Amino acid sequence: MAESDSLIRARELGNAVATAMAQAGLNVREVADQLDWPHATLVQFLGGRDFLDQIDLIPLLAMCMIDGTEREALLALNRTEPASGWARHDLHRRTLIDHEVRAIASTHFAPNLVPDLLQTRDYAQALLREGADYLPDAPNRFDVLMRRQNVLGYADRPRRFRFFLHERVTRAGIGTLRVQSDQLCHLMRMSARADVSLRIIPAARGDLGKGQCVLLEFADADPVVYLERLVNSTFLTDPAGIAAHRQLFTVLASNALDEGQSRELIANRVVELYEDRE
Picture 1 (cartoon, helix red, strand yellow):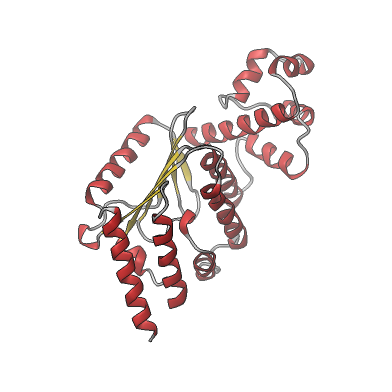
Picture 2: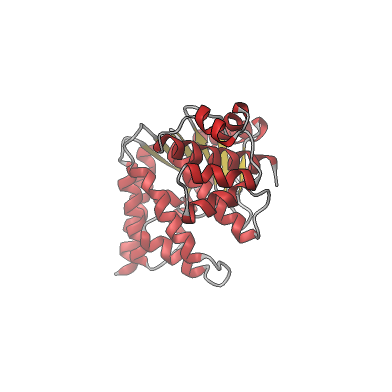
């Protein structure tokens, strides 16, 4: 397993158990004493800096009253290698949800499709229908996407969302003309929110990036980049990878239309779609 993938999964696992411990009214010292573990071992694990042997994790989960599907999910996170490529992809999506909830800022680049957090239900369903032949877990992907979008409504902390979309996203032709126009109207509504910045990269500027990616930033942890792929999506945590993507977003910002110009471009595209429907 790649080092970045391992670090991200360890962070999610430790955070989940730490949260459950707090909800159960347990502290680190008493849990370590009851399990007869060195205090430092539990601190390392809860801090997302190490995994445990499966046989050690099981009684810890029991003490925290974690059972059922959540228990199985955390045991799967603790394994050194998921059972299959699709299992690995599913774990990545769970981990992404966890990190998006904890992030105070996220910056997204979408070169070809509307970014996941801004997709309407109809657009997402049309997109998945088009990929039904090669996406065996399409229904699960849709459910995860809807869960991810909940982060836009959380009020537990201030969050900032920045989206850079290539102009061809507005012309991708996903779904019917009504689905397309409704999706573009949704983008305009979302761009009016105070916590959302949406900017379009004009087609004349060419290709400035080669794949959907998200930079997640936290108040209490190092930043993470998520690279979305059909299979084998991955996380980056190394300083060089983070720096490269910060530079990418700097380049995108210098080439993108401003927010007002971006809304105008989207509005003009909506008018074109209504004319096409007549």
